Image 1: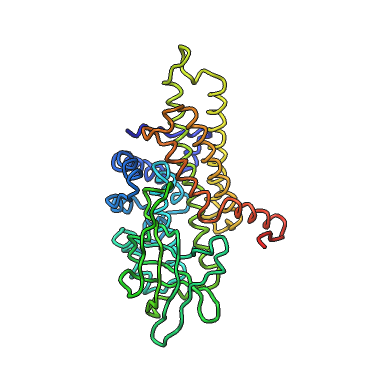
Image 2: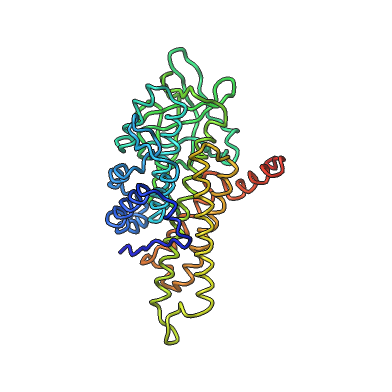
Length: 390
């Protein structure tokens, strides 16, 4: 049973609009009823619960900020963050599915696509009728995406795409893939590749200890003929996919808080109920120290991310600011998961509680969309003006 109670130590809800709170509460009620009761089972089976796609779409989780004219709800960036926080409170894999759909598929089509592409794909992606994935990472190029080997050549009335991508969320069931590859001049462009195109396959990757309720796969391209109208013309170069990652990383910064809040809430409740030495363990100083530090770090992350959301709404948030929030909040959440697990004692490793699942999931989140160390170097470069990547 999902017994989660929200924790708002600095009264952050007073900064939200009535609409934002209503949207959050509606999604939270749906997740508690339909997703929380099944997520442990799907996690253990390493399967994605496809039946929740319709519900996620209904509550605005796919492309929350996409304008209504393209089928989106047209919400602001803070509301987008709130939705991602609620999803990750239940499971990082569920949030990943929505993040990819929103920030890595719908966002580039909206920002860099043609009007025809927007009207063809965005409404169906918003409703979940179509699902998408984002092809950037390759087997030998993760933190250095500019070194990618995937290429496409102009063949007159179409392009021919060759290459491969790895660790791609949603790939096994995606109807479309926004794929980044180099042209003959070594310039990176985005291409919309559809399921069923000859030479395109997306085998599922097995054996994950993390994000087990999220489908992950490869993207393989062998002389795939891509219509020229499927090129995203609005922007090229490495900055194009990185701008999409900015949107996704922003969502992660909010989402990680959700995982931390869930673990804190569970630890706080358990500490009041668990009796040792004839009194609840919440009465002991070391347990209170852990809990006090947890809520302090969650509150700091909430303040950091809310301000970042304001800057995103104003179009002023920088990539480096987003990197700082992603790095800080995921590390915060991981630490809280580990402390919460200890408060639960031996029960903390059982699937009766969510701590270990969140912890394992966050080991992926701390690495994807820019590793923990790479985000540190992004901040370092921003404050010194000196890149340390090479």
